[in-house]
Image (tube, rainbow, N blue to C red; front, side, top):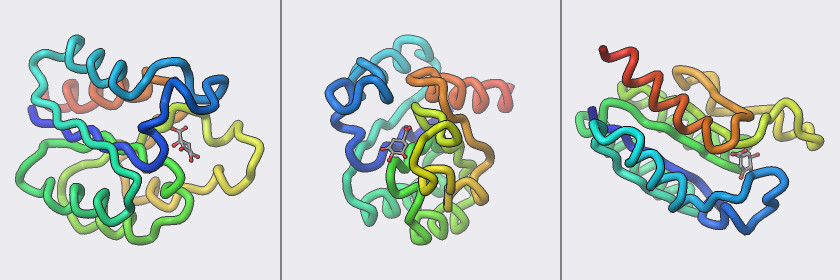
Amino acid sequence: MKILVLNGPNLNLLGERETEIYGEDSLVDINFSLEDTYPEVDFTFIQSNSEGDLITWIQNSEGENDGIVLNPAAYTHTSVAIRDAISSVSVPVVEVHLSNLFKREESFRQLSLTAGVSKGVISGFGKFSYFLAVEFFLRESS
Ligand code: DQA
C-alpha cells in the first residue's frame, strides 16, 4: 500500500509553533513514528508551504498512490484550487487536522473547503489524526 502524507503551510514548524494547540512533536517525529508503526506501508512524506506544490503532488498521485493523508493547514479554509485538485483525481483523500477545527475560536477555521470532496475528515486527535487516517486505508483494503 502506497500512501502520500501531504502537509501544507507552516506544518514544518510543528513542535515549535503554538505547541499548546498543535503539540510538541515535530513533523519529522510524526513521520518517523508513522514509518515505525506501519512498516508494511510505502510512505511518501511531503510538506510544502506552497499551494501550487500541494496541487501538483495531488495531481501526480493518480496511479501512484493508494491514498493521500492530507493536512492542507490554512489552505483548508481558503483553497478552491486544492479542492478542485482533490476532485480531479480518483485517489481517496483523508483530510486530517491536529486540532479540532470546530473547537477553535476563529470561526473561519470551522469552514473546510476541502472536506466536501474528501473521503472523510479526522480532526482534533493531535498527531494521532494521522495514524487514524492510515488505519482507515489499511482496514479498508484488507
Ligand atoms: C490545522 C488547522 C488549520 O486551521 C491551521 O491553519 C493549521 C493546522 C491543524 O492541523 O489543526 O495550520 O490544519
